[in-house]
Image 1 (cartoon, rainbow, N blue to C red):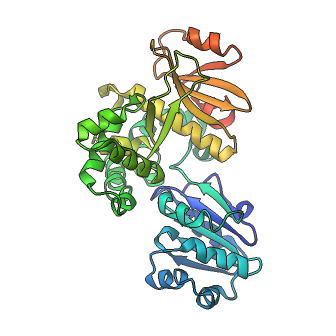
Image 2 (cartoon, rainbow, N blue to C red):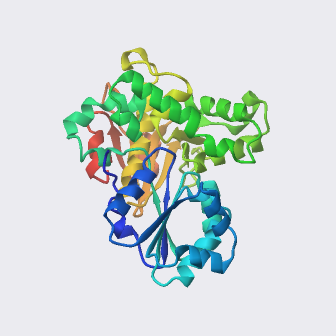
Image 3 (cartoon, rainbow, N blue to C red):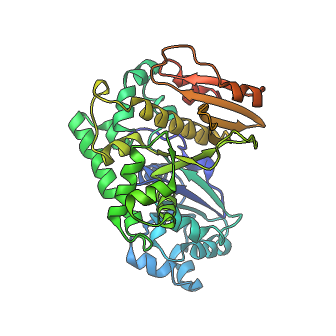
Length: 379
């Protein structure tokens, strides 16, 4: 199994604090936790949020029950903690009442877990987000040449750990299809505010065909025959369940700049391809440019997250169709990036961008230079 960027967890764990590990199903949260527990010298208790007895104890708000549950332990680890009602209050009782105890909780649906632990654990929590495998993690296993050789596989099958370990094309397709159809949407479809699984899946398919393009919520609502607020709610849930991410338009209030539209990208290109059952080879595809843009946006986000580089991410477009795929605003500076799978000519920054933001930097990210962007540099 591959080593994750946040391993070992020792540096993230503090006495009287909760470490919350977020991420979609099957990205390796449980493995990460088990690897840490296998080598820790702390006396620990490992439990699961799926355990009904544990749910009853930790949701009881009974101090005696809760404190008795962790008596004598230095570390409490709870996998899939979002399944425990009132888990935030229980963890607050534990870290407040048990001197020096450390707590690790994992969760695959941030809309449930974040809402439960946010306010009760203010000042007592640290959060890690685990994505499908990042290039900056795979670099420990593969050299740069090998990563380049596997590039089209990343675009088509994605980078879930099990997919990367699969030995054949058919096995990769089977695994990523199972994740997309059986596991990934489990939390959302089991959530009370989702009334129609068919509408949700149809929405995902529409987004799959529009990656890299601006999305109109009104158009989505019309195509699916539902209200705009239903589309907004489902999109919000998909973000919080780690299926998609959203970019808004960048503007410093220039009249020409478009800010009302948004773009959506999938956290994993393999999930996107599984949803539309499209695993064609690169020479039989007409969407490599879209996949490339999605891949670069996500790999950059993974890299910055694991490297601790804060930034705001946007796209940029004007009403006369001048555009930049990705804009980063960090440390008071602007960086524009255009993603091109097959750049056929020298590409320069759009004229209005240069005039409006003369101090901004601009780069084209393509297969020959992308590794510097997602592995070892800040751009």
